[in-house]
Amino acid sequence: MPVHVEVHGAAQIARKFANTGARAVMWQREMEAETSRVIVPAAAAASPVFTGALRGSWRGSALSTGIAFGGTAGSSLQYAPPIESGRRAGAPQPPPGALDAWVSSHLGRGVSAFVVGRAIARRGIPPKRPLGHAVDATLPERLVMRAALMRRLIVDS
Image 1: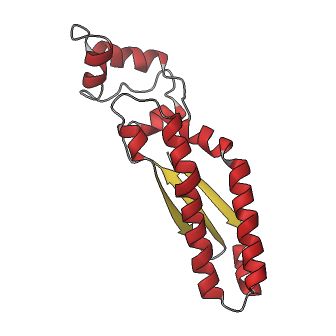
Image 2 (image 1 turned 30 degrees about the vertical axis):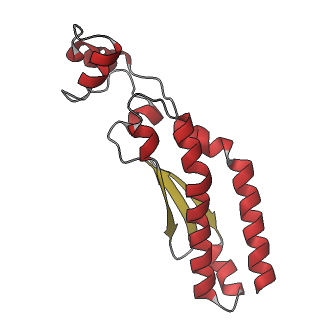
């Protein structure tokens, strides 16, 4: 479940400067660097650890549209969305085999992954929100970075 960070008004800022193309590229690179440098490590640190796969799967990238530049951060792992957002009670049971390794290591070999999956379907899972907490926790740092970038854009023009 990716979290998108957008800065609206980037087109107006870019028009104000003479070298629009170069400035747009610089803004995009800065947003990607901000996402990778600040949000991704914070999300990794806040992630629950079993194998470490979730901690190592967080990635950031830049986005650019005609009116806004921004960055996105997320994980491509299948179980990242339920960890981030939780799972509502009554949702379908997790796919067969998805819980085998976790159940055998945490609950022992005698416990059925099917039974655990059925319990998850009935009761749900509360959200852990590692990415959401990372976005919230890094807001002050990201605002300082954006202010510095804006100063540089204005001074360099």
